[in-house]
Length: 338
Image 1 (cartoon, rainbow, N blue to C red):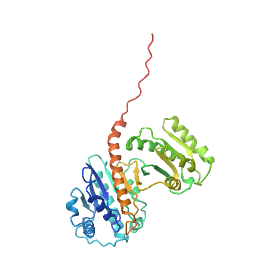
Image 2 (cartoon, one colour; image 1 turned 180 degrees about the horizontal axis):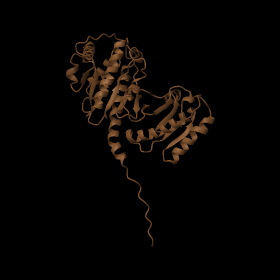
Image 3 (cartoon, rainbow, N blue to C red; image 1 turned 60 degrees about the horizontal axis):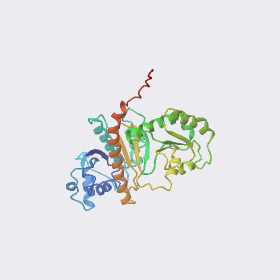
């Protein structure tokens, strides 16, 4: 049974209700995972009682709660309202979970699942806060973390949040392609992942490649292919849409390209994965508003899917890293003189 740390995110949202619904049926707790919730046992108990489940803790004995709120501290939060306190509690949960993982026997290895929080609530006390993935990455000194988007049919990552190719340096593109190869070997057990590289054109509807695609991206792709790294392109978004099922992962230059790839696809199984960390960080893509669940069945599916993704990636990594550390070399050709 795999231990997994879960942070409560925005305590004034529906995250607690979703956790209760997800773990009540006992499927995940029955030999799949041993979750440790970094949050508030008081809020969890209050929410369970309000949902008509006063026996929640008796029915979910394998669910462990690590309180981030002192027992003598009053909890002041309003359902559907993000506050400075809710932002502080969200970050406190993340930091306590990281501290716990870093104290582990495997020097930080483990699974961390973070539930959604409100960035604006966090910025009331931490003005420089960007997102949970960046915060978590700041606690680890090794590697160059990057975010991936995972679904049953599509896996993507992008270089820049905006369609400004001025922010995309050629050496970063090459480094990301190499990082993707490493990630897929270690975390997905795909020894020769097929990577599609998208165009640098700022027009997502462009019909053809640009001069920068030919002068910058094409040489990078050709060089890496010669070195044995399976990458292809560059491709326009239109070309990529026609080949969506032919590659293991798509390297987009910016977020709008990624959004186009996911257009018209079922995204209920989408989750976010921070690759390149010592730990496995997963965040479910939840159809949530602060005060209510917009689609409870989809939200439960998304959370379960993220848990399964996290456990699968961790299992692959645990098995593959030792195997890939000292691979067998090629035998030297022996010539026999007759």
